[in-house]
Length: 276
Length: 202
Image (cartoon, rainbow over all chains, first blue to last red; front, side, top):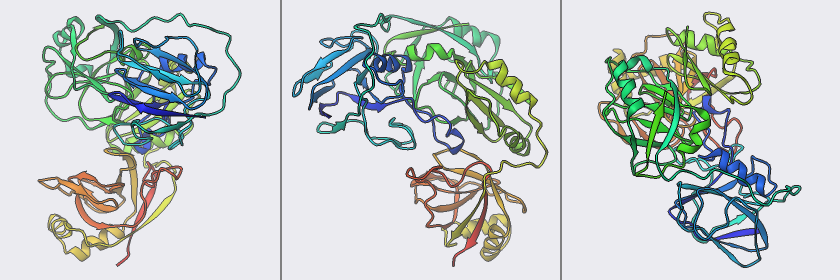
């Protein structure tokens, strides 16, 4: 069983739960940017949560099923594609993902999982380090694995990504004391714009400058997704799945881990607020 | 040691110097279930975990209960790296150390280097020397392309570029060892705790 990619859209990658446990080697975790949506897509077709899915950024994917297969789409709902429900794609027919109605990243699970060769224990594409399979290109033929038992569900009740402003909880970061109280207030009261430079590494946010209250360099230190790092420009970066393992700019705060998935659905031009 | 908050999926231990980092990393060799990564850096050790599998305060207690022994190093094995010492910056390094190029080679091969942490790229390990006063300035202009296998020095550290990349370290030689190989597990030869001996391969 294979899927043939007829058009990849702006960016489609293979993703699973990533490569945890190798950060000390300088290898980041990577994996699906919106883990909850990827896990739900897998559950809807009876896959283990660690099966590889397609992460489709801003829609546009067109694939052909070379044999009949069950699929499920979660994350950003796309026009013209069934959502959060197991869907049969007959042999030789195509599945097209339109433009997202809201959100940015859709997850397409295929019953059996995308079975490309794993690299260091994961099928995830890490766009920062270049590990894992290349982003999909037209003409790629993707092997599909064997399936487990069927789930007893027709459709999942799921909250779709917001098209408006997102509000997420923020926790103290290790270098909170590099910033004065009024800067923390600014962080918490600003409607931050997601810029077009954002990607799987992180969201680059635009708003008032978050100025440090101390000089000097910070030795690079480890971090995880959700970190709000403040470079010298004062414009924060919210790190997502392909973030660097270590960074040398102060982390003022962390988005609550449970809220990072929602941040991965923010499209350029949307706004986000950080609630203390 | 100060334990700093890092959201609800990680904690960051901050230490006085690299020796304390290495000693703490060595003492954190048996993580509880739910801990995903222990990541040493120059002054810190990050511990990341799955908050659904282990509560954050249990991870903090585990870190605080560690009993680092001064001088202790993580046990990660030994590695011999054969080097052809024909690097473009060998003369500059000799000038920085106030000795001859041959003496640089003698000093570089004559001491044991221990990888303290990785950074910059997968498998790029920062190793420190057991002996000698190594304080090597970075190149004033980084190279846009450093070949894989380049043996390099900067600050108190030595490393080997695991793959072709830009870089600002001083190049003293090259090795044919595959420093990073995704078909090998572990993929990186230079991992925290690995003790490295560089050998002059002529």
